[in-house]
Image 1 (cartoon, rainbow, N blue to C red):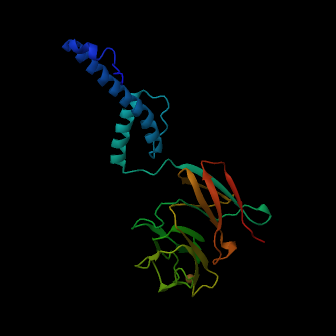
Image 2 (image 1 turned 180 degrees about the horizontal axis):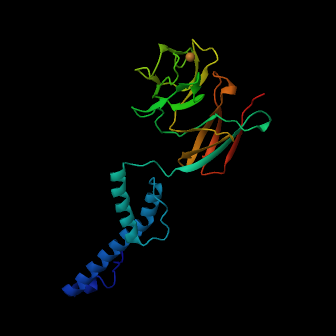
Image 3 (image 1 turned 45 degrees about the horizontal axis):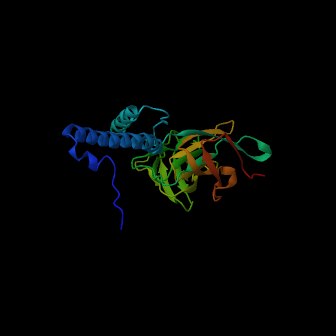
Length: 261
Ligand SMILES: [Cu+2]
């Protein structure tokens, strides 16, 4: 014979008053609410920490988490999803005998980010006193580069580089059509009239790039995470691939030595 297990209290409370039932129901509801609050408390900071642009929320009262979320949502809607918290990456580029290298292009490729610049991105490679200015121009792929001639003599700019062969025949002032550099790599510029004129346009596939100053230093904003750092300098040669290495952010300042004689 199977013994009948009776839950004490329940069945015996069959004659319970409506008030008692109501209290039990209320207890159950508060229990569910408490569980929900616990879940929220656990899940919200984690969810928020994963959201770009928000600081950590340690020990915030549970209602504040919701308030922070609402404020964040409103801000994100207004500002348009901003990039993840960028960290400053400082890179020093050295060449032969550890001499600081100016005009090195430092770029960080972040997985999942667009490789091409948004339409309408422009840059300028001028000509002043029979020189290309700047000598090295760094742009993101997809950038339209104008070639204004500020000299009183005419120039005839050309490139034989595989990533962008082109020619702007003898001109003064600013040529009507800019040249769009859509592939990563390096373009060497020359002038048919002035043999000594030489310039470089280095095209990167990331919005995170900078050129080193006279002290070999460049600083760029990069989202936290593990990425690929690329460094190129004209002394490596126009056909040379940039020197690549892994980089983790946030992190300490980096020093990159280029293999130059
Ligand atoms: Cu010229």
